[in-house]
Image 1: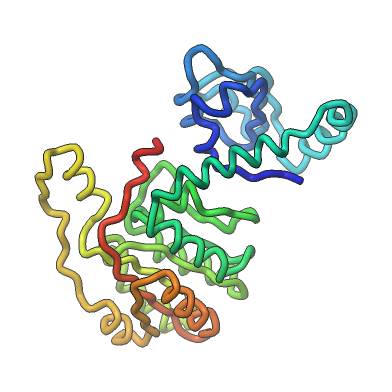
Image 2 (image 1 turned 180 degrees about the vertical axis):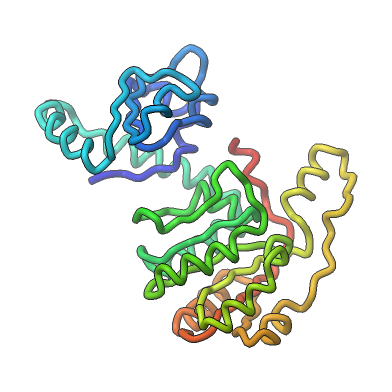
Length: 290
């Protein structure tokens, strides 16, 4: 039985220092490679369709230019004989996973909100993240089960991209729940696209976590610049009334369980978008895990 673990669990001085070989599929491993301890770098086998990416950032032990669906079945067949004589590492990996869950539990209330989202939208539901505190936490604690069900800018960090991107995702996948995770600051970058969603009957679900500030930037100002805050407190509209003025459905809540009931109502709404405003305060930063 495969055990899925967060990439953050493999950062030193934890499991990577005991790893002999890493199989990297469709990733240049830029950030993990930078974090490896100098005295131990596992041999890396890279599988990628683009041969120009193999040696970007570092040189792997083995380079395989192929699509994952072509290479992996062949590799699995070759490994059958070796797996038959080697004991399972499932227990060890389960321990790593449990230790990570315990360590990341400090990210509250983000973990509880993300748990509700994961449970309510189903394994095929699509999550579109954003540069907000819940969005950042999702990158390290939100489980993803299927390809193309977690949409992110990755390292590009494009504030405000989430809502308009999620509209396109919902048009492409109309029969599965699609949620756009956004903060109050990021949502206002493209709030006018509510008109597009209503006009074209795109039943996207927007989860708007409102702390009345650019929360991530304000945390950096507090932690790195002696608490000198400038231009990060926001004067927001009444988001529910604003959404309803466009013709969207609006729901306000302030707890994970409240979000659960709001999501159930939104998922059954098929003709207009739903904006769920979640009132939140300060939340812990994921910077402690970097």
